[in-house]
Length: 635
Image (cartoon, rainbow, N blue to C red):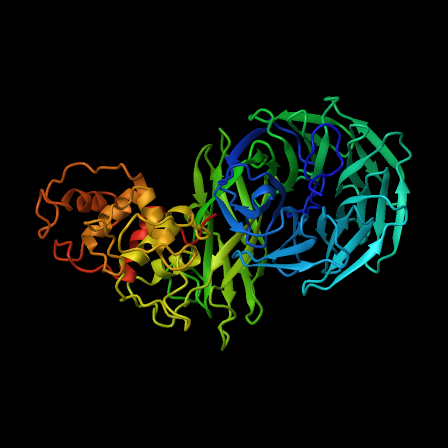
């Protein structure tokens, strides 16, 4: 089954969301603006949305069988999944879990995009899913009238809903039990031991859909049948509140970072807000007929939602602060113990200096508190200084704590005998003093490759390229091969991943593009090479060939990089004569000089560029990081 039983349009069902921000009393309301970000694949039908352990938002793409990731800055990456993914939730294991409604399976995806799925006991359509207080993941089977439980190792157990009604969405309640909606007019409660109790709303025409735990110790739900927002106490008492738009088709609901409840009005094309006292405000979405459906509080203190028909991810801008790239281990400060090379390495105590942009027109002062530091098992993670101050930041300005006040965080990571994982990241949670903003900073731990010591001139950019998922190294033994030559076929992968993101997969090759590149869809380099040509980045090496195994020269690399950055039709300005060994004019002179003008290269030394030298993998890392702006420590 694809959709919930909703009046008006058929729309996918709501995710039971976990909220990243700790809130108390609701914050004062202020004017809201809405930003929208298109999903890469057309017609993807974005559905459930939640926050991952990596500090990004993750969402389902029902019609194209993918899981999407969007950073707080709005950068979208897609990963292949299966079985029409419907709703999504974070698991206690740091992975994302989602319902695959068309194949009766529960999917699991790592934050690196690794995909696995598990069959349920009784085949049926699957809808809502949420993390339980017991460390397991719980989900709804409306056709079977069951609630399912899956452990993080994949063991499934099912529990009957006594009334035989259809459960749709599930969330952990304030009492340590799980609560779920039943379309036929009930709200259900299930203990972690599987004991189910149902409470009728006792309201004619009631059809509960989405459900969320409120800041007041109650459960809040959208009632599609009555077009109202419902509130239920943990003893079963229900109160409903009308909304201004009469035919709204209410879908998802979640607790916002401001201590209010936020909900989606599909037919009315609004995002609604209701205070714990029952005061409702509606905010229209810029894209008409967008189909708002599911919501999640983001790691940036804003509210994020999916647009099923608009094929976009929306953001209600609640926080007056926006995270910006910061620095790690860039400064020698009291209490630090490191080489201050701009990379956190095992065994170091380093300064972490986040940056924040003040979105207000006027100045504001704010501070931060580091509330947690987590990472993979096998190492010890310590917050040595948990406070930071950003001083008074002018309206529209950006400040980091080191330059503003010198008061920043100090963190330590142990140096275990065995590295926990090759791609080792830690997550620092920062709680800001304004707007209940919380942000999860993903901090990479260096020393990733055995053959790239810290003394290597390309060490930091290689760590950056690895962290961004553009490369996994050159072999299965933890090496990068920094002095290895880059071939033209390898370069195709480097460029397209640098341009489109780590999860990018080109369309299958069709053949006939280059004589010396036989088409082998999904295998080898042919897909990548043909896509590079399709984007106008290369026309081959002449004579209808591509010369896939030839080395890429530094001169050729200038053309490849600038066309990747600016588009296939790009032409640089005329050369002026910058490098002693690059004749102006000549075939590559304008390209080489433009690369220098953009700060991507300073040459090879002695006023030369060495245009005919082969491009090595260390140099390639530097070029890609600079051209595509790949920040090692940023949002």
